[in-house]
Length: 372
Image 1: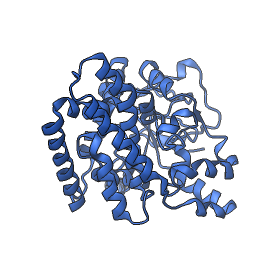
Image 2: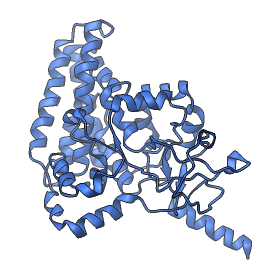
Image 3: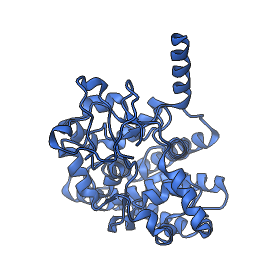
Image 4: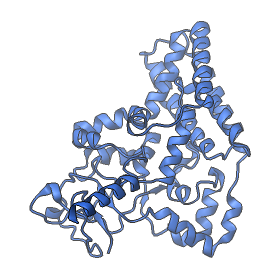
C-alpha cells in the first residue's frame, strides 16, 4: 500500500495488484502525486548498512579534467575547420550532429560531474573548470546548473524546487504527439529556461565570471574565425539536446516509461486517483552510449550516491548488485525518444511529483482552521 494520489483527492490506494487492463490505462490528466519519500535515501541507507566499503568509492576522479579538456579542444578545432563552411551545408550539419552534438552532450555532462565536485578536491576548482568546459556550448550555463541540479537531488520530485519536472502548463499543452515531438526536438530549451521560471537562485560572482568569460570567448571566436564557427557551437548545443541518441537520457532518467499501473475508476477524471505501485522514479541505462556521457545512464546508482564519480559507478553496481538488478532498466535511449513521442500512455504527466513541504504545511493548517 502506498499513497500516490491526485492533488485534490489524497486517498490511500492499494496498488499491490494493479489492474493493467486496456480500459484502465486511461490517458493521464495529472502527475503521479505521492507523499512517500524519494527512494534513493532509503536505498542508500540499506546499501551502506550492508556494504560500508561503498564510502571508499566517493571522491574526485583526476581523469575527468583530462578527458573534458580534450573534448573542449576537439570542439574548438572543429569550429576552426568549419569556419568557412556554410551552416546549412550537408558537411556542416552532419559534422555538428555526429561530432558536435555528441561532444557537447559530453560537455553538458562533464559540467554535471563537476557540479558534484567530482573533478577536483576543492569546490571552487570544480566551478572554475566548469566555466572552461562551458566554452563550446556558446552560452553561459555552468554556474547556474550547479545550484539547480543540487535542488534536483535534494528535493527530487518537489513541486516547487525540482526544476527537472515539467510544469503543469507544459504537460497540458504538449501531452499529444505533436506536442511531444516539439518537446523532444527543443528539450534543451526547456531545460535552459524552465528553471528560471520555476524558482530563483542567488546570482553570485561565479555566475558573473561565467557570463563574462563566455561572452569574451564568443567575441574572439566571431572576430577571428567568423560567425560560422560560432554557429557550430550553438548548433552542436541545440542538437545535443534535440533528436540525438545521447539526448535520450533526459527523458529516460525520470519519466515513468512503463505506465502499466492504471488510474482508478472515478467518475470524474479531474479527481482521479492515480495508482503507482511504488512507481519507480529513476531508471538506469547500461548501454554503449554511456561511453560518451560519463556513465550518466547509471542513474539509480548516481542518485543513490551522487559523490561517486563516473569511473566507479559500475563498481558500485557490482558491489550492491542485488539492490540494482531488480530495478527497471532502459535498453535504448533512441527508443525512449521514439516511445515518448509516439506512445499514447507516455506523456509529460508521467512524472512522480511531491507537494512542496512549505506549501503543504500551509495548506494543511488552512484546512484545519476551516474545519475548526
